[in-house]
Image 1: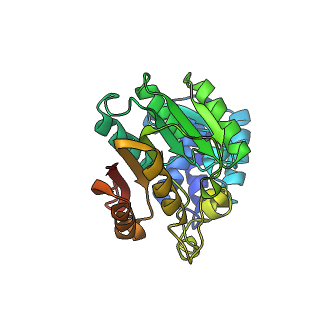
Image 2: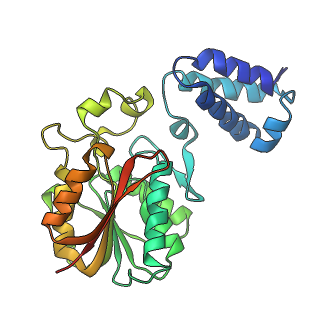
Length: 287
């Protein structure tokens, strides 16, 4: 039999060069906890804890997939976001901590529901993590969410059921907008595609090789294509004083601020994430 420490040493050996040591240790901890049903605290506290052979086989199977660059979230089929559990698969982007910060900022801004009485729309919902987390914390607010991908919407609907919230999911392409979304919203939020081909060169293979490209990449010649479309839509569908939130590419913060200004948005705030990068924008619409 092998111990937790033995497994950890093997993870370091097999995944060296693909991930940083801290990432490898985290992947090892997540894997052992998932397979054994043991808490991370116990695993850390008892590195000599021996693991039965059936668990070792399952752990090694996960390790083999990790060596290909496949994200642990896709392997396990679920992840946590803003304290909630979400199903994930290759049809949707994996929810990330930076997006949790965006959700937190929105909740702070609406003050427990005030300012969002007219309804909330999430554009490009993917897993539904933003819409579902907001609905869970703003139960009296009407929430709608759109996405171009039927597979993503199927996953988002299941996640809404999993977290016991009611959301109106709609298949629509914001770049070719012909859907019957005519309601006026108090708040619109989007984490749209914003990665350029130049950015792609710096990205890890577990993102570029496994996560859906339609949810990631934009044309090099028009990196703000989604922000332009969403800003135009918001200028026609936000109530006076309504709020627009974006997650953004850190390299285009000032350009997006200029775009919003040109569309009569006021009180524009560019905010840094936990890594001190410009990653979020809030703006208020004034007719």
